[in-house]
Figure 1 (cartoon, helix red, strand yellow):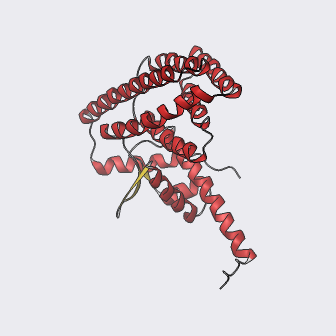
Figure 2 (cartoon, helix red, strand yellow):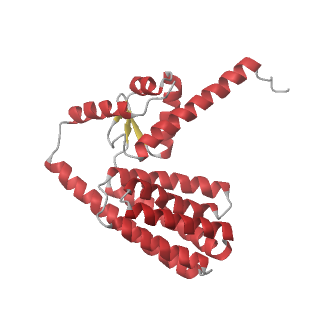
Figure 3 (tube, helix red, strand yellow):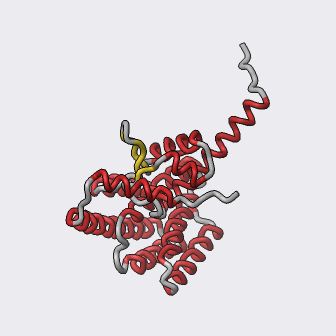
Amino acid sequence: MATPALSRKSAAESVKRTTLSEAAHQAIRGSIITGVLAPGSKLVVGTLADALRLSATPINEALAGLEREGLVTCFPHRGYFVRTVIPEDIEKTYSVREAFELVAVRHAAKTADNTTIHQLKENLRQARQSLQENDTSRFSDLDMEFHRVIWNSLDNSLATRVGELIGAQIRLLVATTARAPGRFRGAFEEHNEIYLAIRNREPARAASSMRTHLYNAKTALEHAVAKDAGSSSSKSKPESKRHRTGAASAQSVPKKKK
């Protein structure tokens, strides 16, 4: 028996709902990975719906998607909260990241074309400029884009999606912790070493440079998490008060323009 075709009206409504859910997903996700919505913040559906000028349905669908990404946590009878990083998260994320990125960087060093090499070189140029201007937010974006260029060299849509999921976790880790002093300059130098290895077609050197880069990034995050944990324990608040503060911060999602 043939599957009945969707009516034009129901198909249009389905597409519209998907579009709105995706828009909500991107808006909330962006606010989480940039730290606008702080770790531990309660994500109140009504507040988010008002801020984004959407109904509750696309907000709920967006939050469910963000939970699957590992950016939010849903507690029964309490709702959704921005996930708070613990030391174990760093270990789990970086064990997967290292396996993935070493495959990608070796492949890039073997096969990268002139376009990929130019993209990496231009990324480093802009990163150097952002350091000179002390624009750490711009540098963080360029940092992730540098790795994205390497993932994309695999020319594999599944690998790209895996990279984006890992990237979101990394941005959450960085947004959760205090930025390690001097880490930006070190990251830039490490990226440059990776670029030179790719440009010179040296897969072993590229993998070694990437491994060093990831080790240093992981170590900096571990130190930052430990420092934040020590700071938080000395200034602990009642749980209910933290949740009220978190709920208020959910209003920080940029409002959708009319």
